[in-house]
Amino acid sequence: MSHNGDRFTDIELENKRLPACYGYLNYKLLSLTEAMNELQNFLNDINRFVKLAKRHCTYPNDHNLTKDESAAIYIYTMELSDDSSVYRILNQTLRAEDRTKVRPWFGYLRLLDSATSKLPTFKGIIWRGIDKNVTMKFKKGQRITWWSISSCSTSIDVISSFISKSSSSTLFHIECLNGKSVSSFTCYPNENEVILMPGTVFEVVSNPLSHHGGLNIIHLKEISDDDEEEEEESPRPSKPNPYKPSHSAISTATISSNPVTTHQITIQSQIKPRMFHNKK
Image (cartoon, rainbow, N blue to C red; front, side, top):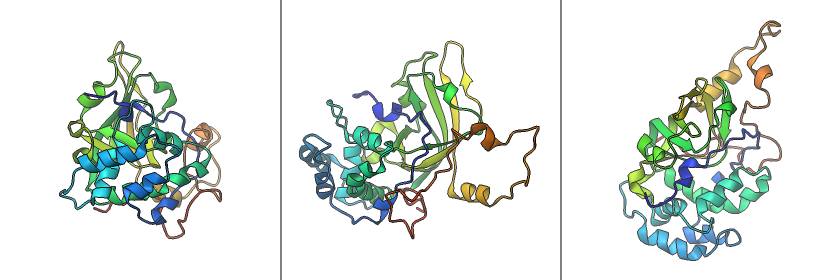
């Protein structure tokens, strides 16, 4: 590997309750140059990297992505040495409590959404990892939301190459429903990369598995729109069982219901909250 793998190991550990941010889905579709021009204040020398992305992106391709769409994926995976990589700055912004900070990224996010909507939806097992023992933050039955774009791999060997093989490291085993396989469009096609778009919700399937002297494993399952709707429509008991605290009473501070407030930046009156089209 020719880079440090930060895309695969930059994992959201604080399960924040943030307003959803879907307004970019109704934003006008720009060229990559136009979209990145709106980010001049956040990204150094971005025009040069736009040119590189357009030069090296996969075009033409089997999925009919335009050159700008293909380059939008490519530039997301470019590793820049000065900590100004697109993925790093974008994901920091998507996790920020101040949702107005996302607004300058609408043009790029709209282009990335247009690109991924043309790719087949990936359903299967994917992996992420982090060089920390974070098992104490995950409990069976917990719902969590990852607000940033999450880079994963279908290959456990890829993730293992970026983390140590010690008890201080954690692997995430993820049952994915709505991933997008972008490996043919990235800087590193051998990494079998699958991305999950912002706002993906998971359930912790089981309590983390800790190996003595080895890796820790956390098993997550992506929650679909249908799963969330069924949960909302299911009848609730009029009185809680006094001898068995409810799931929400136990974990109110950590369970995310993907809240939507009047403060969200959105033009979503006719948009179902899901970050990208998954009907392919």
